[in-house]
Amino acid sequence: MEEEIHVQMEDNSPSIEHSLRLISYTSWLLGVGIARPRKCPKAITITLRIVHLAVCSVIVAYGAIDFFTFGSVFKSDIFKIMYYMNKVMCYVSTYYYVYHGIRQYDKWPELMDRIKEIDQKIRKEIPMNDRSIKNVETLAILMIFACGPLSLIVHALYYYFTRPENIFASDLLLYYTIAQSLINSFVFDVVVYVLYRRFQTINELIDQLDQLFGALWIALKIRRIRELHTGICDLVIMVNDIHGFHLLLCSANCFTMVVATLFRIYMGVVEKNYAFMVINNILWILYATQFGLMCWICTLARKESDKIGISIYAIVLNCKPMNLDKLNGARNQSNLEMSPPLEGPDGEQNSNRSSSYNLNYVVMENILRKNLDRDCVRNEVNDFSIQLQQHRIAFTACDFFEMNNALLSNFVGVITTYLIILVQFYRPENPDVQFNRKFR
Image (cartoon, rainbow, N blue to C red; front, side, top):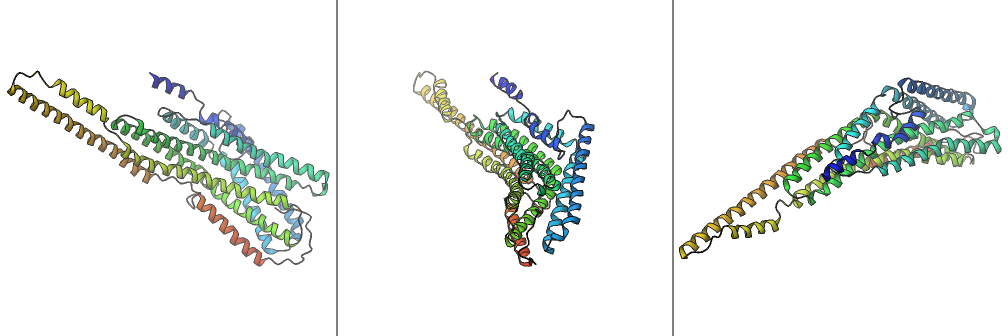
C-alpha cells in the first residue's frame, strides 16, 4: 500500500516539458532551434521564423555594405580571408538555426514525450528531483539576456554619449546573432544535462540494490534497470539525429570566430589600436566558453553512463542470497521439530539419524538455492554488460567527431597552430594605422 501511494505521488510531479518551458519559450521567441511551446499553432511558429529570416537577411545586407564600404581598410590579405570566412560561417549558421526548427517541427514534442515516459518508469523505482535542471535553465536564460539585450543596450548608450559616430547597425545586430547562437547551444546543453541526470539516477538505484533482500529481487531490479538504460540510450540517438548538423555548424562557427577575433586583437596590439579591445576579448571568450560547455556536458553524460558498468559488477560481490541468521534459525527449528521423545537406546539412535538427515537436506537445499540465486544475478549482470557494450553513449556532430573534452583540447591546439601561422604571415604595411571601427 505504501509503495502504491508513493508511486501515485511521484506521478503527479511536473513533467520535464513543464520544467523546460522557460528555455523553450525563449528559443521559440528568438526563432531558432526545435524547442517550442506545444500548444502554439504551427502557422504562428512559421510566421515568427519568417520574421527572423528577414532579420538574418538584413544582417547579411549590412555585411555586404561593410564589404564595399570598409574593404579598403583591410591592410592584410590573410586577415581579410579570416574575416570573411568568419562572416560566411556566421551567416550560414544563423540561417540554419532558423530553418532547423521548421524542418524538425515535430521533434521537440516527441522528445519531451519520450523523456516523460522514461521519467514515469524511473519514478516507480526511485524518487527523482529536477531542481538542478531548473537551476541550469535559469543560468542559461540569464546569460542569454546579459549577452543579448542587455549588452546591446549598454553598447548603444555608451557610444551614444561618447562617440555617436561609432554606432553602426551591424554592430547592434551582432548581439542578436550572439543571442541566437547561445540559446540554440544552451537548449542542446540542457537536454544533455537532463539525460545526464537520468543516468545519475540509474546509478543511485544500482547503489541501493545491495540493500534489498533476496537475489531474485535484485535480478528483477537489474532487468528493470536494463529497460531504463535502453530507453535513455534511444533518447541519446534521437538527440544526435536532431542536433548532429547543428553541432557541426556550431563548432565551425566557434572556431572561426575565436581565431578571427584573437588575430584581430593581435593586429590591434601591433598597430597600437586599442579601441574595442574589451569587446573583442569578451567575444572570443564567449564563443570559446560556448564550445567548451558543450564538450564538457557531453563528457559528463558519457562518464556517468560509464559508471553504470562499474557499479553493476559490484552487485555480484555484494549480493547476499540468504540471511545467515535465518539459516541458523532454520537449523535450530529443524532440530527441535524433528527430535521425538526418547524411549530407549534404539529409538534415540533412529531419532538422531533422522534429525541429522533432515538437517543435511536443509543445508544442501540452501546451498543449491544460494548458487541458483547467484547465477540468476550473474546472468542478468552479464546480459547488462553486453547491452552496455552495444549502447555506447556518445554525442557526435554528424559522426565526424565526438563532442568531449578530448575535442576541446584539440580545439585549443588547432587554434594555437592557426594563430601562429597567421602571425607569421602577417606583415602590417603601416604600424601607425588607426582603425576607427571594430571588425567582426
